[in-house]
Length: 331
Image: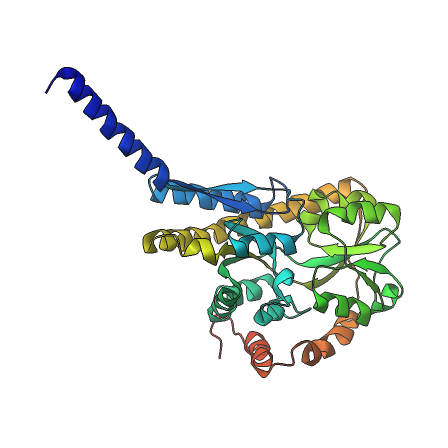
């Protein structure tokens, strides 16, 4: 065989190897409505690093942050496989995955520790598993801190202060019902339009956690942040079931493991981020209302549980959450 023939054969083998390597490499596309420095975006990037390390560079994650699409649209993209994965608020799944209603309920969790223990345990696993019937693989929960109401009109200290307020709600029938029960008018508008709606007077108030309140600039247009801490509803990292079936069993295990490990990373970031976000809000003129009568809100909202959860299975799940003990066991 001539030198030219050998060289051609070698180049052909190299080209074939390159094609296989390229075809075998996958950059998973992920999405989040929050900005680049938010704990959930950083956690997904960390997850991508873990995947790259453990698959020899075959798998990685490209995280698109500050997504302007509605989360309903994003979930649809994940279902169809147009998007590999995404971090979304759990509320967006309330109408399609009934068990997601439970962690969304107001004043369900006694503390951050209680919430994390429940979501990391069998109840959380059950909720994630139920998403598969909707074309989604639930990977893990990204808790987002306690949510509180903030307003451009004035402090909200008692449920009576809520009367007549136009309040932005998440894309969930449950949250619309909660706002109506409190005496407000629910306004379902896209997340990226909240700042403008507060500034124009289209809405009087919204609700979210400290990091989102600051990262979105809402603190500049709604300076009264009332610590109602009415919900600890988490976000959830979802993966397309359509794309999932294309991955090898080993790669599925790698994705699940990296997702679970990213939770601790996210929580460490969130705990520090909340402190700095509150400080930034206060330094820019926000008024923190900490003398909130939370019992007045709970008295109105807790009786809604049976109406929001007509299914006995969901009612039992609430009882299991409430019966959780410090050891983490759930009866």
